[in-house]
Length: 438
Ligand SMILES: *[C@@H]1O[C@H](CO)[C@@H](O)[C@H](O)[C@H]1NC(C)=O
Ligand SMILES: *[C@@H]1O[C@H](CO)[C@@H](O)[C@H](O)[C@H]1NC(C)=O
Ligand SMILES: *[C@@H]1O[C@H](CO)[C@@H](O)[C@H](O)[C@H]1NC(C)=O
Image (tube, rainbow, N blue to C red; front, side, top):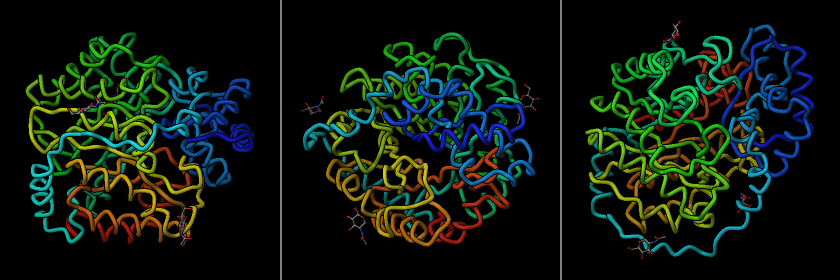
């Protein structure tokens, strides 16, 4: 998410209200403007991230904080280890995002037959939407600027009781963001941290034993310790280590990395994703879905102009029908997911149309791994329109995940946390039309 100067100001103000714990939201795109704002702030990341603790620390504080503070909470996403520290890279982000490669005619080999057979099996779930997956990201483990940080202070794991509420409502997929620096301390190839892995495993097992899907999401923007991940071998080792722990759980989904952006070379994102796929399959995890994300924050709306349509299509898998292109789509003017205002009531469908064509033309499967809108009628219509369009194209779209649920969101504009999250109350009925069991 982008951080504007005014939001930063609001964030600092909100910090005064906040309890001492710090959290961070790793999410959207820090634009050139946002990185300027981040750099301009003295304690920048910490200050912004701190504001988000308004939302978390106590319901009372959350209740007194303005919605602007909640927006800032989300924008502390930009304060991700990668985003802040790599602000020079971030500074070039808007140009990189805007300067897209020419109309990408992806010469990707198609697996159309395979894809459509998978799609038809996905629609055999009985859902009228045709979706196999509908759910939400579950934030918490990626929060906080401290590495490794302290459980319960800097970060938290999702609340299985509220996940159960969402399951009871009809959701069946939960994406679990976490930080690679906490999971593999000091170096990407390190032995995994036993406590952090145990926390994650507890939540994963809860979800999958309930019959839902758990998505493992290293929420790292293709960075480790603020540096672009350049070693495909090391990245593969990280995934070998992680996937080994989950290789026999069919309901686990591996999401290679959250929102790569501003990479060193045009092909780097696809190369990292390929290393991830190869490593995971190498552990014997051959029955699970793998989600791969593209550059430019994996935006659906820029998929065919960002270079993703040229380079991502060549990723190969050793098993059929389980490689899924995870795209993200917000509906505010800059697509950053920082505003409760949507462009207009049709922007959801508009922004996913070109990506839908790409999926179809190239015989690929897609999922919207993050989407959201504010609690107002324009956004609600736009979200409904996007899901309806995707449902009409459920031969290529397997489903969608709202951003986001989690116990520390407070009054965040997109909070899907039951029972009273802003989006949970506004969107429950709309989303329920698309649940796989609906
Ligand atoms: C996470 O681990 C900590 C100890 O490191 C423990 O106190 C806590 O209960 C765990 N939480 C979950 C949800 O597993
Ligand atoms: C993708 O694969 C196709 C077919 O093999 C090839 O023509 C094309 O150059 C590849 N694209 C990239 C970016 O490697
Ligand atoms: C919404 O905005 C998009 C992008 O500017 C535009 O293409 C579309 O026509 C607009 N829809 C309406 C109903 O105005």
